[in-house]
Amino acid sequence: MTATDSRATNDPRWRRLPEERPGQLLDAALHVFAEHGIAAAKLEDIAARAGVSKGTIYLYFESKEDLFREVVRQCLVPRIAEGERVAGDGTASEQMERYLRHHWSCFADEGSDGWIRLVLLELHKHPELHEFYRTELIEVSNRALGGIISRGIERGEFRRLDPIATSAIIKAITLMHVLWRGTRSSKPSIEFATREENINSIVDFVLHGLRAEKNISAPNS
Image 1 (cartoon, helix red, strand yellow):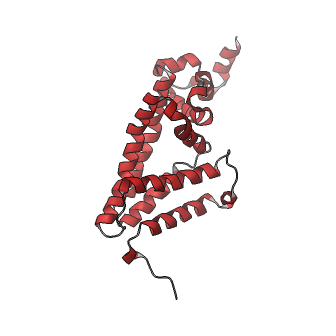
Image 2 (cartoon, rainbow, N blue to C red):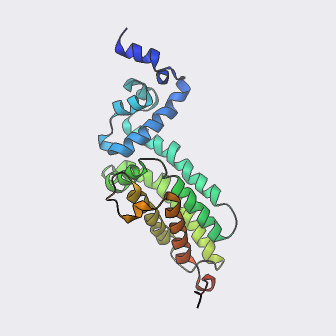
Image 3 (cartoon, one colour):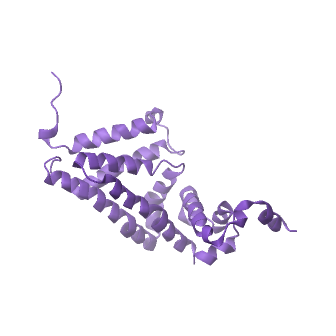
């Protein structure tokens, strides 16, 4: 029996049903892309993490680029859709808070900062994937967050701001905090705050920045 045969016999990951493998490959690819980036990610590393042979990947995905696209479609886009659902009804402030807390929870996994670095620093080097990511995820996310801001403006809850520009600012605040908490952070003082304290501060800051003047309570004299 070869080493591969022995592994296939003893490791339960190698005995997964075929219908389970695409999901396992996508989960493995998500982590490997986040850790190494697109160019440096190796299919053999993804296969090893998923517990299958490298050749198995080609049964489900034509290329590394195809695998990346499916990671975005099946692992990331649903989180954006869930964010829209979570925002739900209520005041615009309530919707914004729920959206922010959901967005923050999506970056709770270890290695999330690696994915952000991939998007910010490498994705532009792959024009087709960059355009795909922009269309499938960024524009959809901007519409969801911008919609909350627009509703708040229409109802008089939020002051008049450009919804798209404001969405970018809010995302920048959240994503920067994810980077600060990441394993490659320069470790500023904010690292001593818990994740709950971080998101509480973000929510408080964003809502105070959005509120119309009539909705801002005067400080105690």
